[in-house]
Image (tube, rainbow, N blue to C red; front, side, top):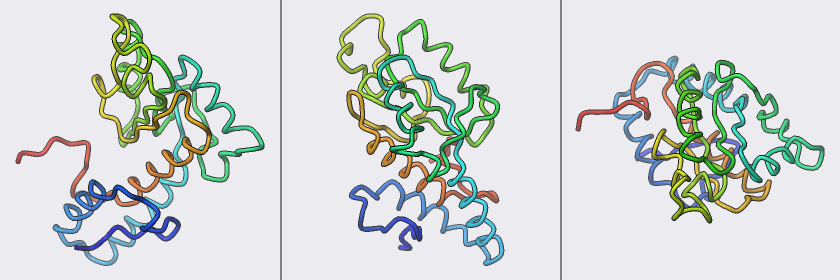
Amino acid sequence: MKKPKIKSIPYEEFTDNESLEKMTKELNEGGVNVFVGAMDDLINWGRSNSLWPLTFATSCCGIEFMSLGAARYDMARFGFEVARASPRQADMIMVCGTITNKMAPVLKRLYDQMADPKYVVAVGGCAVSGGPFKKSYHVLNGVDKIMPVDVFIPGCPPRPEAFYYGLMQLQRKVKIEKFFGGVNKKEKRDE
């Protein structure tokens, strides 16, 4: 089986590659010619290095995300610096913090307004699983209950290095997608 090869990220640095290898296998089964494959690589390189986040910060994880824009961490090095306030201009939504049951429909509406392909990053314990409010009646126990999540960044709140690791994982996912037809990981497939 062909392993996903990304020049900027060594394969050995990641410990959990099963889902990416499965996606790569599905993409390679169709057999693509050299020109289309090279165009896929070029387009995905551009897409992965210019992911524009729509920030949805409801608590302390939002403050940690703001530190990424400061000079110390400088998210512009990775292409994430264009944080958008409109869902129509964003590529991914970063759900930073606690999502209450009243806020869940608003978040889902923002997700629906984003253009395809769109990605979701759940940041912090509250967005991943409900965090310290897990057994509470008013908090959503994970945003994956209302929308598909591509990357989970655990922590309470996660450090800026964890943000970068999660965003680099998302870049890695984008780099192996097939732009010209084929398998789209978001579509439901008949099995």
